[in-house]
Image 1 (cartoon, helix red, strand yellow):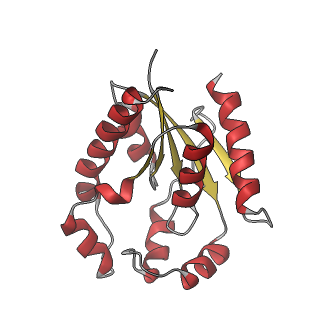
Image 2: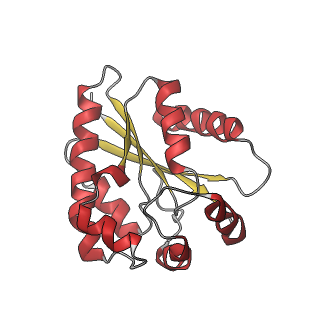
Length: 176
């Protein structure tokens, strides 16, 4: 059995960590927040308002893939849930290329207006609030040929519980 890592992806403020943690609890799978795997230098860079480069992200994504695959293989269900931005296709491809696990993605889509509002209320996170535009500029929305990506549009009035329920149902269908 190949271990499966579900990556809840999107820009900062989309709710990745919240949704991923709740999915992990509901599915009985370990949860990993990829933000916890950044180097201190990367955290300091983002906290000062400087966006990460691809060179900054590559070793981080390799570490995310390695840690996630290991946690999934060690779990009873052979699954884990990961909160990770995975903004560009090349970043998703880096995770997909892991030889130790299958990676699938759950993209939480929101409008820039809703994201800006959410970030305005957010405290105690190293991601500088003014970096939303940089993240949106970096974002490459998943394309139709990325068959391992589920898109959940959460711009409307979906509650957190509805987002988690919808995500869980769609994941179960994809993972069959």
